Image 1 (cartoon, rainbow, N blue to C red):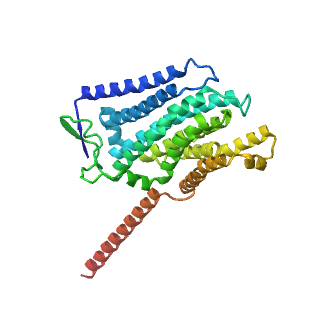
Image 2 (image 1 turned 60 degrees about the vertical axis):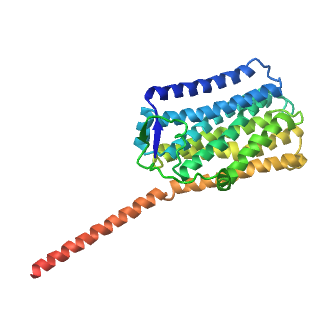
Image 3 (image 1 turned 135 degrees about the vertical axis):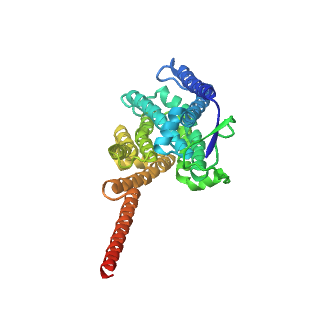
Length: 363
């Protein structure tokens, strides 16, 4: 696929504008909360500004990485080295932004946990919990759009950047990007293709936001700090996807990251909420089962909706890990098939040579 590009100085201007918007959005968001006391509440006005700034931050970060990878010399060398298509570049960008969001979430969770869980488990609060709920909610809605863009490029060769950069000369991204006019899949087609992750994002970005900001009923933030810390495994998940796009599935880094990902996912996603229920049982002086039974029905449903996809994803990760460490991957099978075919070809050539030699002797 060919992308219309401009001269180098135009690319630098675009990168500078995106970088300025990105850094400015983050700086303004920090400025909105830096002077607050730990137990202050976030007003609707302040929260709305945080959400708007969060949307600007994550969207511009995604575009910044894309432009740097698609329209700079370093990006071109990287694409050529790893034979990356435009869709793969967008997918890597999406995963890098996801890792950044996860880092923010973990920092928030650590701050809130250190403040709230060491005081009153049921009542202590920290403004960071609500502040990042406002800021981070924007990520989940941005990510739906971002994943749709990745889906479009991975299923078609639609030129996402052509209308954004109407420039003079053209440059081929890679040998795998052959321009074809294929109808862009609709957003609803993407929704049918990825229903689990879509429901997860809507639940976290919508209902999860409402619970933290409005529906908690005056309860503290210790529980929500563990929800934020659930993102600890996301950088490993993102790195796994990036390494796969870079064709590094056989590397030691890929395997080591896979083990770290499984450990972090099991600890921070699968075991986190049951552990929070245990803390609640201790704080309420109840047995574990009694504590779970005492939870409101809405809380039980929310925990189930949040926890069940984690079991599903952990199962998929475990199956993938077994294939990597104990079985053979699709690449290994392909190599084995090619080796077998090559061996058969060599054997047939040898038989032909021997047959021709016997014929010569007889003659």
